[in-house]
Amino acid sequence: MNRRELLSAAALTCVGVNGGVAQAQTSTGLDALARTSGRRFGFAVSSSYADKEPVKSLLRQHAGVVTAENAMKWRSIENLFGVPDYTQADRVAAIAVDLSAQLRGHTLAWHQSTPARLTWATTEVFVREQTSHLQALVSRYRGHIHTWDVLNEVIDADQPTGMRESVLSKLWGADRYPALFELARVADPYAKLAYNDFGLEQDEPWCERRRTALLRMLERWVKRGTPIDVMGLQAHLNMSRKFSADKLLRFFDELRAMGLTLQITELDVSEAQLQGDVAARDAAIAALYRDFTQACLSHPAVEMIVMWNVTDDNSWINRWLQAQRRVDGQPQRPTLFDASGQAKPAFHAVAACMGNAATKFDMKETRHV
Ligand code: XIL
View 1: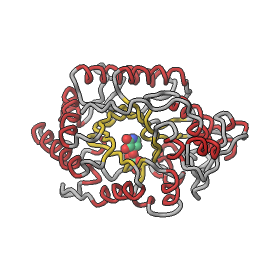
View 2: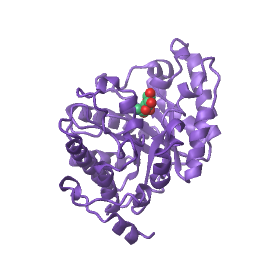
View 3: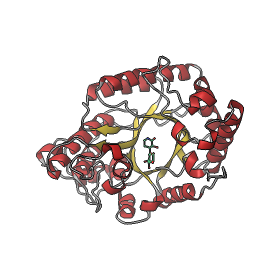
């Protein structure tokens, strides 16, 4: 299909979501639509549901990027005796090959996935273990990974330093984070290298403080020549927070000015407090998806959008976040597809924006090899 055919298949404007006017045909894949503006679209998956229907077919139809939801995290790879087992990680890598999709590696260093046995390690032991874990993992998938999330969630705007205090800051050292990128670059010179974090996308004072802390950290890293190519924005959006496209785009401009491309890495929408019946909730959720996607696709540094999970019933929000249960006991509706795999208004909103993206991704050649 050429661009014109894709667009007419989408048959859409970005405007129709609330009024329920335009509906994308679900037969046009989201990745195919994303490609019309030089971008890609995909999902984080676990092999436990990726191989089953309806997810299997949805991936075939819409996925151009695959991230391992958990399988490439250190704690998932290492068994209780500290021995690495890559079976699950290999499965997700095979899914990406099977789909001819780009593979995102997630994540080489994260305080939540550091093995518990290392919590009380000496600095020397920790540095040795984190280094050899990173080198083994990156080398294993060398040449297959489009982008590695090298480091995940290390900012904390409430700390004077702007950096989170954790097992990583304590035992690896917050001022040595750039060394993680240097190690990853040596182990796989073909992969783009990303820093990934949350709480940066919406229009709340605490998000603004996090944006400031992030920009300060990245400025320091870029100044000292850290091999970082990508800012990964998790985009776990929340219906109870405000959104401003203007503020988001100004922030994107600052990231682009540092030479970074932008990837939306874990998109979903929480709606624990949203009132109304399913149709009203779905329409409100679709409107936030539309506003966010439209803003992202109007920026030339945004390279891809990746959803966190595929359908509402495999969303981590319904599986893990007990604290975010709705008071009416209903499951949340955070993704583009309902439990049976049916496209929801959020799908049509995203497809419409993707089919109409006038601004192309224009930072293809920025990898700092
Ligand atoms: C989540 C997974 O979805 C859950 O299955 C797991 O129990 C915890 O981690 N930010 C991240 C992801 O970078 O790795 C997290 O994934 C969601 C928040």
